[in-house]
Length: 244
Ligand code: ATP
Image 1: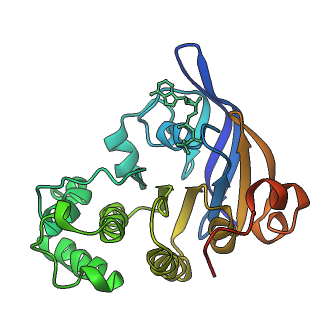
Image 2 (image 1 turned 90 degrees about the vertical axis):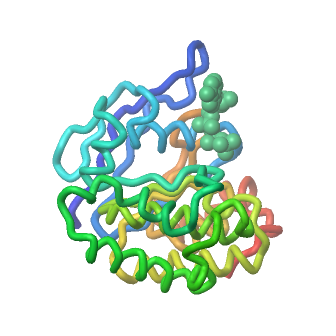
């Protein structure tokens, strides 16, 4: 198993608020890793630090290179792209143009054909987006917008896809559809680090998981084992969450 991402002793603060404290974790090639935990646990801050969007102390090694402190666009170039919380699409732009933006760093070095091929593949992957390439992103349903945001992340051809709460606020049927897509990506060998409050869904899709509380990792292990852990069951698997 080749380690793709290694995070050691990561810490990040907003002024006096220490959001992430001494977090260490790994993601291997072809692995899906979940981070679960309550609101305010520091999950988004951790992903933002990995993406180069928030300054952090500690060490981040990606594909054998130290990447802490490098600019967000260079993180993408090295092979890590973020699907941000609440999607952050360009609502007045078309589906197609939003997807193209995900591939901006490929423009100089790859042919238009390669990028067109990937746009086609993303539209195929999310069947409901097929035929909607010309639609304005802001007119899509929440579920379709989430699919588009994931598609935009994939357009970077990432070695590691970072996903922040991709199931947030979505209806059960849409959650099912996104889970189907995540399983498909996983079967293709896509490495994913997913942050999710929907612990049941996250543990169903992941190989391994970390539980964060108060900025720290408080539990870690195989996802299937964590799903059976009484502490996880009591705190995060109340049974009201839709999945499977
Ligand atoms: P959520 O699921 O609500 O996004 P989270 O686990 O992702 O929660 P973070 O968003 O990383 O947690 O927040 C961790 C802590 O940092 C919280 O105490 C939060 O209030 C604080 N925080 C997050 N963003 C900022 C900010 N821009 N400025 C100041 N404090 C922040």
